Length: 181
Image (cartoon, rainbow, N blue to C red; front, side, top):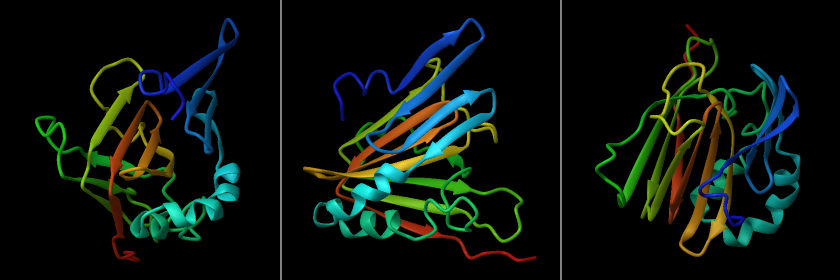
């Protein structure tokens, strides 16, 4: 993680008085707001780097990250646009385990996701304006990135108005069965 990113995960570049480009600073994955509600998502640099990370990523993180549908925006197991439904209590500043629950919403053929993190050492949550995390449908997951760390891995999740970064030994992702009703 580049110096200063932990306190400033979101950069805004002013292009003109009424045009700003917001970029979430993951190491490889790009999430860039072009205008209100319009984003450019580009995981290609990360996907190119992934084979080099294989020996250093824990098994669960590797399995989740390399799912062929993970960054396929039309696929049922793509993380883009998932909605975080809850966060563990803030009182657990350094929990040994941590779980995030995501839902897709009423989209037929799509399913929710639960990510369980083991041996968690840090959880960082940053919002655009320093307020509480917004659980509305507007604040959906844009994309994520998992990288090796001396303690296992980091999982960084870029939302519309926030970033969550978790350092842990490993993670396990479990997709809900697809409901075709």
